[in-house]
Length: 102
Image (cartoon, rainbow, N blue to C red; front, side, top):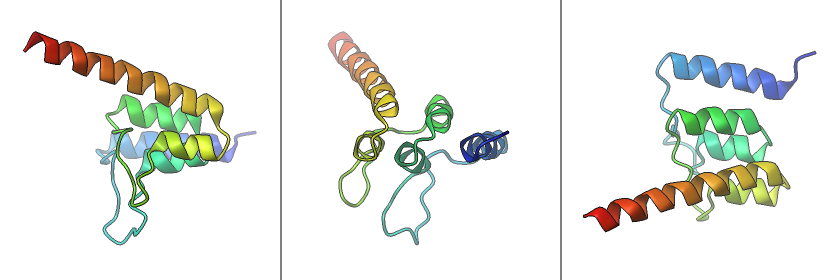
């Protein structure tokens, strides 16, 4: 039996195949939340991974200055928060190395 999480993964994968913008946030969305924030909040680990692997910016903040990792932590999705933390550290390390080269 497929779960809603699997269905979300399928929908996101299909949208990405057709050129969807991974950091899309409608102008009418007063919360300014991106798809990766929604996925992290709702415990959709594979959707978070899929969005990240397709270029989602996990450092974007909403109107309350929260990032996807914050939503994962608030909602008790430690595995997602840990995954996002690893990616953030990796990204920051890469930035530091690039700055040293300049």
